[in-house]
Image 1 (cartoon, rainbow, N blue to C red):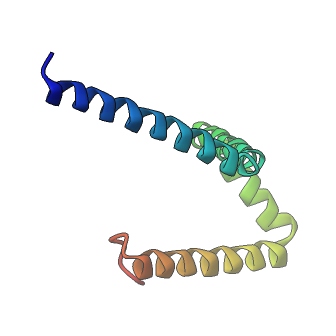
Image 2: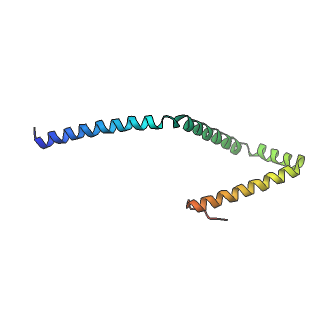
Image 3: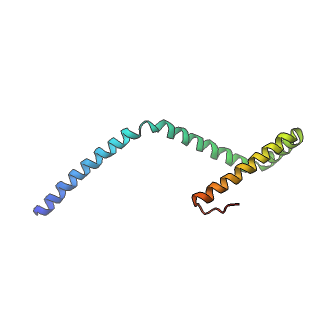
Length: 104
């Protein structure tokens, strides 16, 4: 067998061993984050589920908002003001982060 090819295979084996060790070390280093990442994944799933439900039932959402506006007008106005402020801030953050969104 060609000595260069043998050397190449040996180098490849050493590199694969190092890569395996680095992967194991990375897995050990990131283990404490597993619970936090699991919590984030669950929260994202719940958010998507709620968003999909709201999109599937626009009539119920509209009725709930209208009932709230009639029953507690000050609370509804306060909530709308807070929502508008949060939306504007989000748009500013997106523009600042350079995601392509335009600042209001």
